[in-house]
Length: 389
Image (cartoon, rainbow, N blue to C red; front, side, top):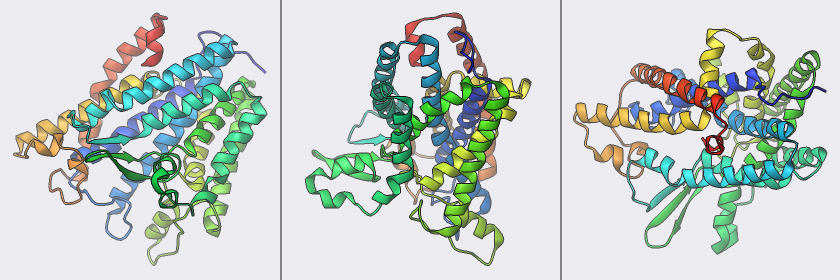
């Protein structure tokens, strides 16, 4: 096995992370700017363009969380100090949870009305990092088994519902069942990202980091086998409808609708099939990404090197663009600052999907130079606080 140099970065990880960050912005541009406010994965009513605009963004969260675990493993190889690595994971995880309900929430809602709060992806990443801070003290094999049990086995819990826990239902909502939780006097918490199996995804990503200690030939072979294995397992399980997703597919008269049925998997929480469908192809293309040492690779890696910086900026930018565009065309400001207003299916605001794509491209390009500048800052200075952005 090879050891990693102190300043060495895995190009494929930065590029892949950058690609999913760029695609993620498409989903949020659609949320804020598109005039289609119904379910974009509705096979009968949403157009194929709308369906696949939403579906392609499914790759973002699982790949990002998986790679967060991988980055934690690689960071540990550089320090060889588990206490230091665990401390950083714990502090970073707690910091992400705080960010979710403060700076990030403000970017999503543009208000300080805490009658409505949301547990989204940054919350899930933060909680998973806190758990990983404890897990790294276990042997590598034990972490692998733990992650595999959560990811492979969590769909066996689908029949258990929070209502059966009475006044303790919130704990099951936090762990495995998406839902609104009402508390206090008119306060509600929307748990979009229950924690199981995201904790397992990060644990498996941590174990996956070992692949990058192999020499190039063995590493590429391992990436090929793991990626193809995940894809084949997805196809076999999905075709059988036996296990891995509560949403069963069936054939349609239209081939495109049959394809949509086949790849429509549950995200909240992510089913086993959802994770195989997204992480498998990502692993498979990593050898090709490692060779992408050109302007395209540099473009995506710029975003991948500063994911949290990009994430926060893109929320404020896209939401701000939506607010300004809405005010120009006469939309009331409440559409953009009222809790949950933009996710109302009866909302009439927005532009066509084609125009939404132009907004998305524009937002991504606007953020390129700020991200390039900040990536340079992180590369030149070894300040402790830079690890948290």
